Image (cartoon, rainbow, N blue to C red):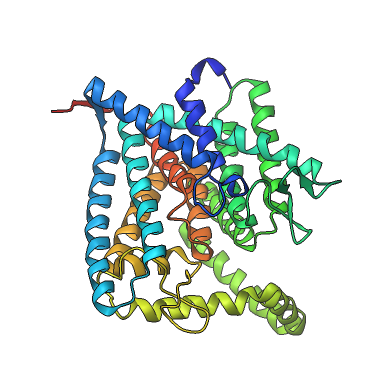
Length: 401
């Protein structure tokens, strides 16, 4: 990692992204902390710089996100009108989500119009560096102590928090990092660089396991399977016909295992499902979220939280990005998000970047169990996935008129 390639704005931006997950450092009950403040400063400085230079990078990615956010904002406004008419709009949650969406909109548009693909790829290295090097000392310190000043290092004595309030927030930061580290490791030609990225890969895995996040573990398991399947297909070691055959055999083995070890498997799944009452509550939130979305299927109800533990419209989120997004933007917004992720996934597949496909797999799977749309770091990983598959392609510089 050559530090000469890093600019101050890139370092600032990467640090800001990592610190957006430092929710223990936020001020009182405000959804603003050091990371968010740093990103706001970055947005202002870069925004003025773009206006001063009167130039932007008019790439296909920028056009894609302009279309995406333009339609989403229209849907949010339309949904808000429906929510007001039906009397279900929650002012506090609605304003919080709206500000977060506007922030993410500006964040993504300015990032893709200011930095080209190579610079975003460099920022990926910095995020990897700051996340692992920042959290590792806390994890090591936490082997003997539970607190570091005002920071609570562990949740319930067993799940690593780092600097977050919820271990799942730390998991969102860490979930794609092993595959990002592997991406840089496989493309490094200097031995010491390989060693460094291997250390980051191992560190990200250890820290991720420490969070005790089931969503992270499921995301990793799915990404590993997808990664090795793509590698085998790309190298011709397995054909699609053999893939179908192997998949059928695996399914049969699984059914045989269930038949033979049924009681033991059931007991283990049941323990995991009812651990902390997470399973039943989450399923209930999903069901009530879908029921709420069915009352405004096209455009949703605008920004806010519309699920609930006992009934819909009780002010709770679904803890599922796609269902929460559907309650906010309707089926139209869901399909638009689905189209965006599918387009990026296909692009990664066609460019034969196995690690990028694995990164996208982790981001999609973790979205099923958590609400990630408001997290800048999740959107950066999406931008990173687009950028590393676009390196070498020219970007058109356009004058602002």
